[in-house]
Image (cartoon, rainbow, N blue to C red; front, side, top):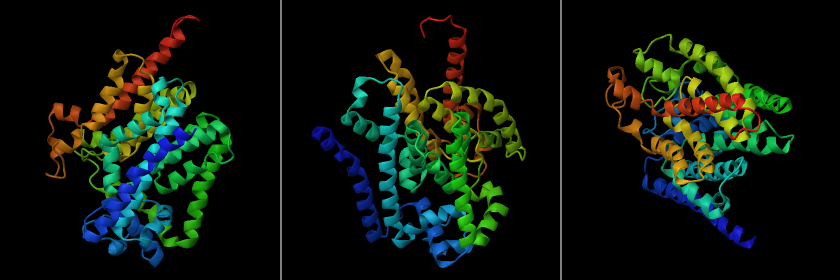
Length: 398
């Protein structure tokens, strides 16, 4: 017991480094945390009664950030504490929280594996996995930009895999909170409904709507502005045809030169995918089922930047948990290679030359859709296995 407790010190090392770097960056005037600067600006705007969805809200931002606030007004409420410290320190604190969230996700997902190799149960193994996952582009980019993705993933993972497994009356609350910060976690309300966790789904919706009502009382115009116009404008987050947008919408926009009907096409695809995905959720163990919903959400979202794909972490935990011999290692190795390759950074993209994605060659389209291909291949594999399992006679080897 004492050995296990002593082994947990590693969890605090990387977060402490983030905080130190944040303080050092503040003292040196470094440019740290472009996205966390936006979060902080939202919290500061709310504190000072400035509009969230106008250029005036950037007054609290440093000149080197200069991005609009694109999140629900409820998110600004959670970002208020960041406004109480300098921008770089806020980045360090959020980075520390993100790394702690990564550790939580690894631990919870390892515990949720239907079966696992013995080596995955030790603290040394968990520490090694946490460190190894830092090389994944969605993970290190989330920390570097000061993104909230790892924290939101941890909220969902704990809610679905821990609170749900225990039948807790708090089930669904964390999903509702996550959705109030970014709308995309609303997909997990559907996940709860598919699992017939009616009370959890109701709590998730109740928390989400309750926070909207609270913000309506606190900053009515911001709520009206967001739900009336800002939420319908995905271009507020930047050109959504860029290679970094690894959603089906981004792919359609790149393939068809910014087609105005891209979201309609994605809606049709979503309707086609929803049935097999729902079947997989209903018939899979808890962790694989959660991943089906997570990647479904990433695919159908209008914008899924590469740093949103932090769900590669629990996917790799699942695949590593199925390795029983060297020949089983190809699947996690291939997935890790995709997300650690940083291939999207080196693609010709709109950061360097406007509309260059519309000029991609077929090979560039294939490589530039690498993240999209992962859930497509994994989902197809799971579906084929499910069909084969149903056709096998009772007692046949799985």
